[in-house]
Image 1 (cartoon, rainbow, N blue to C red):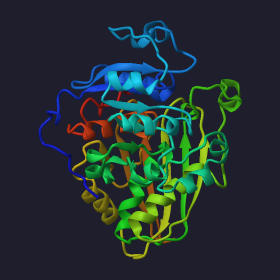
Image 2: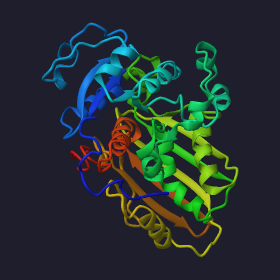
Image 3: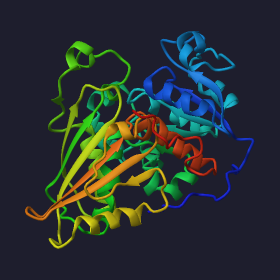
Length: 368
């Protein structure tokens, strides 16, 4: 793990390479990326790509997020993109990014992918988990799956700064792995019996209409989904296994709650040393994340709320120990669209350009 920023200076490595294209700009991840880059001190938005929105003016589609240039949404043709951009953020449905990435890399662009296409080291594993997408898209890019850097920023800082392609984690893995990995790395918890219970807002389902996301369906209700075999389970297990050096399996259950944005993850594990206290455990988190100002470690007895991180790139972590059961309880709150998606993408983009990783990202919450 590398918890230091790539450069002490805020000057990019090459100030000429600051043009950014966003493909899938009209989805939630794309809109959030535009919002974060709109006033970024170094990057310039030079290309917006889409599908159903092609040919439309940005300001007509999103008058609440006006751009001075009022660009037209264009087809995602790699030859055109390569002439207008140095970096590309892909906010696309799973499977589609893989159809663009090889050509983009061949043309010398560097890619930040917000989908799941390159989160797995093995293409075979991706095909196993994303069965429907694998049947639709013919992929042969085994080498790119191995090359892509998994973009959990605080844990892969050095590799991200040098990468051609960074695959940003899902929102559930981000929230769950941040508090869990320090204890796995130091062997402080048992490798078996890890349980993750997580809740997310409806924006996690994307902008495409879905029956379960309708107001009349989700309001005044909470419901589990993907109880066994949720796609993010294997993604969590992959990095947990790499960090621990052991084969890790977790029991992961997500829940949909009636709010637009926010994600709360609660992780349960069994302590190896029953004498480890909550204060000891908090010290572990503080030590690991001491150079990460966007990760807040809360005092013992203070538990995170999603409202506290809303509209920010922050993660708030808390820990408690149940001496009676010998279990540790790890809690994490993030904004699923920022730290869980677009914000972490910009964090990685900053590193790739040689900037301080939090450049242009908010850390102050709009409260209440």
